[in-house]
Length: 184
Image (cartoon, rainbow, N blue to C red; front, side):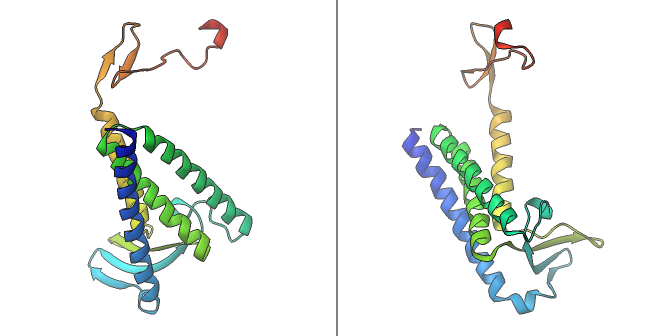
């Protein structure tokens, strides 16, 4: 797979994740009066309306505008790094996985820019315990990360002539991190 194909494949998944996320969040916001009290869909699943001003599970939540902009800048920097990674991958599965993470990150980034918080609306629960509400951007990010782990776990480990292990033929430096440059 060429770099161009990798980028196209990943961006197609990013766009699909982003558009799906934004469409479902718009529907949740349009149904805000109904979702304010929660709507039971299944005995273990509700639709709710929540606004997350932090990151995963509400960590680092703040009403401080500086904190909001810090999260926006951090998300932008991570997304830029993921785009660089996307251009370099040579696997469709890896490109799709990165696309899902990028699309999800951009979906939540747009929410922070437009609303000051991320819109969450999916509420799963069991016997009174509720998983923190989340959205399809979060789902895309988690699925993408899981796919990246699968790709990494499936990659064959081979021995290079130097005796250093590699994954997919790319040499890996196995020098212990605690040793200084002069000792290598």
